[in-house]
Amino acid sequence: MARRRPGAPTLEEVAARAGVGRGTVSRVINNAAGVKEATRRAVQRAIEELGYVPNLAARSLAGRRADAVALVLTEPDWRQFAEPFFSEIVRSLGDALADTGMQLMLTLVRSETERQRFLEYARGGRVDGVLLMSVHGGDRLPDMLAEARLPTVMLGRRSGDECVSYVDADNLGGARSAVSHLLEQGRGVIATITGPLDMYVAQCRLRGYQDALESAGVKGARSWIAESDFTEEGGRRAMAELLERHPEIDGVLAASDTSAAGALQALRAAGRRVPEEVAVIGFDDFPLAQRIEPRLTTVRQPVAEMGRAMIRLLLEEMEEPSVAWRHVILRTELVVRESS
Image (cartoon, rainbow, N blue to C red):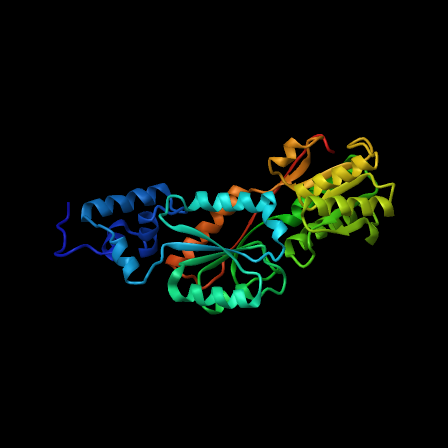
C-alpha cells in the first residue's frame, strides 16, 4: 500500500487514486444512482486505502449542501393531486433518493407570488436541486430556476425545445401505437380524449393519434377530439360528448387510464358494449388498468425508471454542472387487454 500523505486525505486524492472525477467520488459517497459497479468498487477501495472520512456535518454547516431536494408541483387544479400518476411518480422519486441521505421536500407553486417565494427559498441554499412536474405551457418557473443556476430536472416538457434538463416518455410514439392497434382491429371511427392542451404531454399524445390516422389514410374529423383534464370525471364527460356527436364511434384513445375509466362509465351508461361495439385504450398502465372491467388496454409508461432517471440527472447536475442540458426520452409499450 502506498504511504499516505500527512493530514486528512481529500476528496481530490480519493478521485486521483481511483482514476475518476471528483463528482463520481461524491456520488459514490452519497450512494447515488448512475455509477457503474466497477467504478463504485474502485472508489470504495481508494477510500479504504487512504482512510478518507467524509465530513457531511461540516459540509452542511458550511452551507455548501442542504441535503434536500425540492419536488415542485405547479398544477393549479387540486384534483390532479388525487390522480395515480402523481402518487406513482412521488413514490419512484422517493425510492430513488432513499439511499442518498437526501430529503425529498414537496412544494406547491401555483401563482406568481408562490414562484417568487420559492425562487428566493431555493436561492437561499435551502435545497440542493429542484424537480419539476405538471408544468403547463407558459410557466416561467423553469426559466427562473435556470437563470438562477439552480440544478433542475423537469418531468416532461413545455415544448419541443427546452433549455432545462428533463425526463419524458415517448408520448407521441405511444399514442401512435395505440391508434395503429385500433386500426388493425378494424375500427373505423376512432375518437380521442386528450389531456389539457396547454401541456406538451397532451399535445404529443394528440399528435401521435393524428399521425396514426393520417398514415393509415383515415381522414379524422376535428369533432372526433374532445379535450379533457386527465381525470375520471373529465373522461366521463368527454366520452358522453363524443357519443352525442358521433354515435358511430367504435374506438377511443384516452390520454390517461383515469380518463379511460371515466369513458368506460359513459359507454356503460349509454348501453355500449366494450370491446364488442367500442374498443377503449388508456395511457399509463397503473394498477387501475387491471382492476376495472373490462381490463384496460393501455400504453405503459416506465414510471419507476422515469423517477430514477430524474434523480440521476439531478445528482449529476448538482455535482458536475454540464455545458449541455440532458434530455432523456424513455420508451413506452402498448399492453393489450380485454378492452380492445
